[in-house]
Length: 308
Image (cartoon, rainbow, N blue to C red; front, side):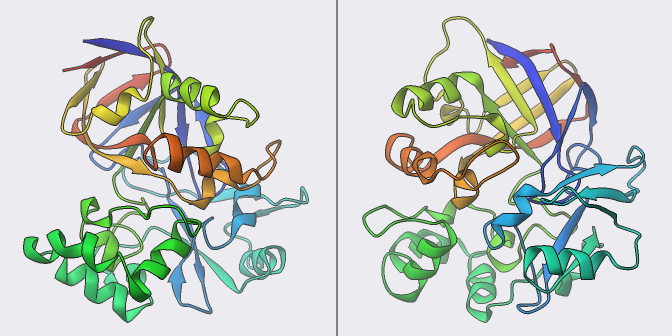
């Protein structure tokens, strides 16, 4: 089934910083080479951090000096909110970023998956939940366990939910992202590819026309221009199905649960809590779909997208 064409391709050199739009890209087993190739670690909590914890990160931007190839992660040039620039190989980069962000942070390239300590969450409770979630019986009990007490409070804070809003069902997430800040060997939230459609953005704009539903708020890798006649939150129904883009095939895994990052200010975009409130209320907390890679290849703007 023809569902649209690729309208935009995005890569994010540094986790939670503004991305770079590409005319084309290769897609490998771990997604677009160089996507989330760098991340910041909070040296107070000793944990990889993101725009949920440090919203000002989203007003920074990063570009690669050269194209990532063969698993190599090149250095990046970073533009900070005040317009000043610094590079990842500058000896003062950690000091400068800490000053600007108001947190003691360090900038890290991807580490090997074997370096579990680098990716492990700081809270002992989260690590325990992640390990226990490898067992199906515990995973099935998670919605109940997280519906009260400290776990509920932690999730409400993590996902920026108000007191009268539901919290996400974390049992659908891969167990490793409960124990670790990302699947070890990556800086992804859950899966290597994130897909969003213009049909979904248009639907959300109908629910909340005063908000700016700019694609940059949602940080997809591929924005699909939906085919004529396709309306609504179409990708919310794609979990378990396969997308074909040229020679590339992606397995749609789970809907993309949304957090407070969607409402934070970015370059040219004001902070707007109504964006998240609308997603929670009118889109069942989700917008977009996460995917894994079945078949590698090339993707370009204008490529046809089929649901198979």
